[in-house]
Length: 189
Image 1 (cartoon, rainbow, N blue to C red):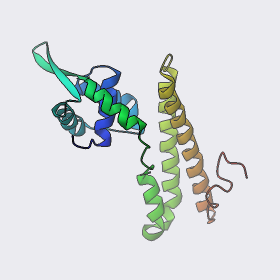
Image 2: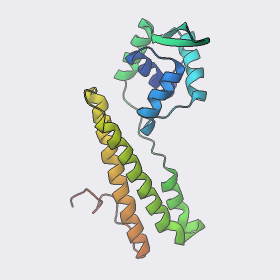
Image 3: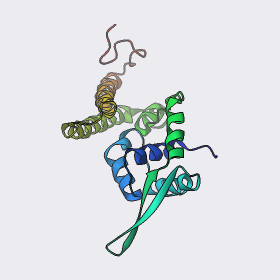
Image 4: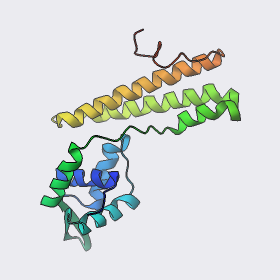
């Protein structure tokens, strides 16, 4: 059996929660995992096809109002594969942030833009934290592990907003931001 992509594993897990169509998977991703694991239709449908070909999910066509929709459910083999993956150690975090990349390169491109870039990124982080808080307000009765991820996301984006605001202030004063961990927002020295 071929190795599954991380996105395929995410889709398999989402289908394990309950049977869904490709459209429903995308809607679920957009309202939950997109803050840490996004997926486009261009990824979802090919992965659904591969998962079905590998016998990990099965699709049932259900006509609805003249349109055909395929509802996917996980198979016993899919549950087994998902449990195996779940027990494996997670890959190291690969953090990708375009705002951080722009800030990193600002000195070589346009040094005066650095404080603005940091402030823009702080504002984006505050906006994401606010969206997550809105989701949290409707999260009554959610599964505890999903709720832990949600509250971790809020804390992460609050931290990033503080970090970028501090960087903007330091850059405006022409100071270096302190060494990693030393005096960082939310940290005790």
